[in-house]
Image 1 (cartoon, helix red, strand yellow):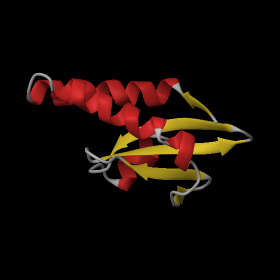
Image 2 (image 1 turned 120 degrees about the vertical axis):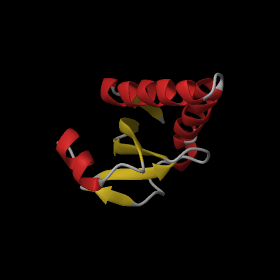
Image 3 (image 1 turned 90 degrees about the vertical axis):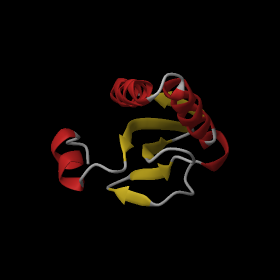
Length: 99
Protein backbone atom coordinates (compact mmCIF):
# COMPACT_ATOMS: atom_id res chain seq x y z
CA UNK A 1 0.00 0.00 0.00
CA UNK A 2 1.33 3.44 -0.94
CA UNK A 3 1.43 6.04 1.88
CA UNK A 4 1.19 9.75 1.12
CA UNK A 5 1.76 12.35 3.82
CA UNK A 6 0.09 15.65 2.93
CA UNK A 7 1.79 18.98 3.55
CA UNK A 8 -0.64 19.74 6.39
CA UNK A 9 0.48 16.56 8.19
CA UNK A 10 4.14 17.34 7.54
CA UNK A 11 3.60 20.75 9.15
CA UNK A 12 2.01 19.04 12.17
CA UNK A 13 4.98 16.69 12.45
CA UNK A 14 7.44 19.59 12.25
CA UNK A 15 5.56 21.46 15.00
CA UNK A 16 5.76 18.38 17.21
CA UNK A 17 9.48 18.05 16.49
CA UNK A 18 10.21 21.66 17.48
CA UNK A 19 8.07 21.39 20.61
CA UNK A 20 9.86 18.29 21.86
CA UNK A 21 13.29 19.55 20.82
CA UNK A 22 12.72 22.67 22.97
CA UNK A 23 11.92 20.43 25.92
CA UNK A 24 15.19 18.51 25.69
CA UNK A 25 17.72 18.19 22.91
CA UNK A 26 17.32 14.91 21.04
CA UNK A 27 13.72 14.28 22.05
CA UNK A 28 12.53 15.94 18.83
CA UNK A 29 14.50 13.42 16.77
CA UNK A 30 13.07 10.58 18.84
CA UNK A 31 9.59 12.02 18.19
CA UNK A 32 10.24 11.99 14.41
CA UNK A 33 11.50 8.41 14.50
CA UNK A 34 8.46 7.30 16.50
CA UNK A 35 5.87 9.10 14.36
CA UNK A 36 7.38 7.90 11.08
CA UNK A 37 7.51 4.36 12.45
CA UNK A 38 3.83 4.62 13.37
CA UNK A 39 3.00 5.90 9.88
CA UNK A 40 5.05 3.12 8.26
CA UNK A 41 2.99 0.58 10.21
CA UNK A 42 0.01 1.64 8.09
CA UNK A 43 1.45 -0.56 5.32
CA UNK A 44 0.18 -3.48 7.38
CA UNK A 45 -2.50 -2.06 9.65
CA UNK A 46 -4.34 0.59 7.63
CA UNK A 47 -8.06 0.37 8.17
CA UNK A 48 -8.09 -1.38 11.55
CA UNK A 49 -8.25 1.85 13.54
CA UNK A 50 -11.52 3.50 14.55
CA UNK A 51 -13.11 6.14 12.35
CA UNK A 52 -13.44 9.25 14.49
CA UNK A 53 -14.18 12.09 12.09
CA UNK A 54 -16.20 11.49 8.94
CA UNK A 55 -14.14 9.03 6.86
CA UNK A 56 -10.86 9.58 8.71
CA UNK A 57 -9.28 6.78 10.69
CA UNK A 58 -7.39 7.72 13.87
CA UNK A 59 -4.27 5.84 14.90
CA UNK A 60 -2.78 6.66 18.29
CA UNK A 61 0.99 7.01 18.36
CA UNK A 62 2.74 4.37 20.41
CA UNK A 63 5.14 6.69 22.25
CA UNK A 64 3.75 10.23 22.17
CA UNK A 65 0.29 11.72 22.81
CA UNK A 66 -0.32 12.25 19.09
CA UNK A 67 -2.91 10.86 16.71
CA UNK A 68 -2.44 10.17 13.01
CA UNK A 69 -5.56 10.88 10.94
CA UNK A 70 -5.68 9.10 7.61
CA UNK A 71 -8.01 7.91 4.88
CA UNK A 72 -7.83 4.98 2.51
CA UNK A 73 -8.41 5.62 -1.17
CA UNK A 74 -8.15 2.60 -3.44
CA UNK A 75 -4.70 1.16 -2.67
CA UNK A 76 -3.31 4.30 -1.02
CA UNK A 77 -3.21 5.64 2.52
CA UNK A 78 -3.35 9.43 2.76
CA UNK A 79 -2.20 10.99 6.03
CA UNK A 80 -4.10 14.26 6.54
CA UNK A 81 -3.03 15.31 10.02
CA UNK A 82 -0.81 14.33 12.94
CA UNK A 83 -2.32 16.07 15.95
CA UNK A 84 -1.50 16.43 19.60
CA UNK A 85 -4.20 14.42 21.38
CA UNK A 86 -4.18 16.91 24.25
CA UNK A 87 -5.77 19.57 22.04
CA UNK A 88 -9.44 20.28 22.52
CA UNK A 89 -11.84 18.93 19.88
CA UNK A 90 -13.10 22.49 19.31
CA UNK A 91 -9.55 23.62 18.41
CA UNK A 92 -9.20 20.72 16.00
CA UNK A 93 -12.49 21.51 14.25
CA UNK A 94 -11.59 25.21 14.04
CA UNK A 95 -8.12 24.65 12.60
CA UNK A 96 -8.86 21.59 10.48
CA UNK A 97 -12.04 22.25 8.57
CA UNK A 98 -11.84 18.75 7.04
CA UNK A 99 -12.83 17.40 10.45
